[in-house]
Length: 139
Image (tube, rainbow, N blue to C red):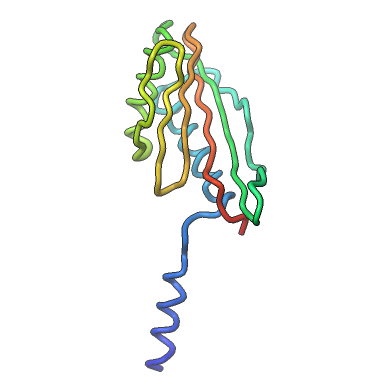
């Protein structure tokens, strides 16, 4: 019996992270979570994701994107992005890797979930966020 337990414990330590499908689901949950935290109206899925995009060598990435209308007014693109970044902290732990400057999207990464979000609101009260996973094992 003493031999079985260490082997069983060793088997649990072989997890190298999420598969592309698992990270893709996390990506979807994070994007929709941000829009939910902002109480966005008329949420529209602009990239349904759920499909593996081959990176070669048995690796793939997934994408997802959505938009929604701001319920409080008509802030600038930078203002809308800032509101989503604020909401992001209530959804998951991301690190901003590019600063918001006029006309440029804001990129945020989560190393644990292997996902990247891109906040690129065009203004006119429309939130827009897209994302992708890293290249990950298919299974």
